[in-house]
Amino acid sequence: MIALTVALAILGTTLSAMNTGVRITYAMAQDAEMPEPLGLLHGSYATPHTAVWAMVVISALVGILGVVSVVTLTGITLASNFGTFVLYALTCLWTIIAFHGRAEGNLLKHIIVPVLGLLANLAMLITILGMGILGGGTSQQESLLALGIAAFWAIVSIGYVFFSSRRSGRALFATPGTPPVAVERA
Image (cartoon, rainbow, N blue to C red):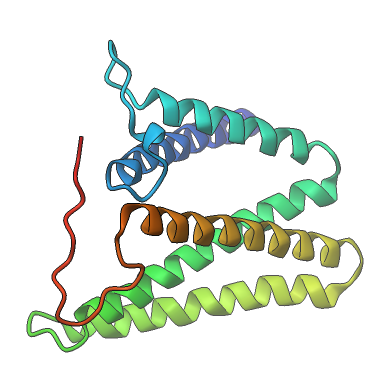
């Protein structure tokens, strides 16, 4: 009974995460932060069908790679955790930057909590990867695989941002005193 409950919880969490991933991908494509086809809606159902199919393909590839070995599966899992910690750390960092010097900033909500969150996520990231790398054996292989996957996605992401900005004529970094360029929506 407990195993069935856990299986249902994992299924529900997976479906929820995939739905969120598809919707965020769609919204980012609408904002020209991801390839335009990912922002297309199905003609009859008004669902982001291209983003759904992209998620299906990526999930299938991850599943295929995950069954290669326990080391590969654990490396993929660690890469996912790595991404989560980096995402949360960056969210905390951008909160600190966004509210720095603003009158409506709240010391607790916009400085103390984000600084603690940033430090906690960096500590978790360093601890998990550090223990894996220093542990040797398969733990080291898994951690290095996770770092390789993260590096690959970082290179792909940076490349996309660079070439997309260049193609659209938008500045990669905003210059002080220059008004932001509005993104045209279809």
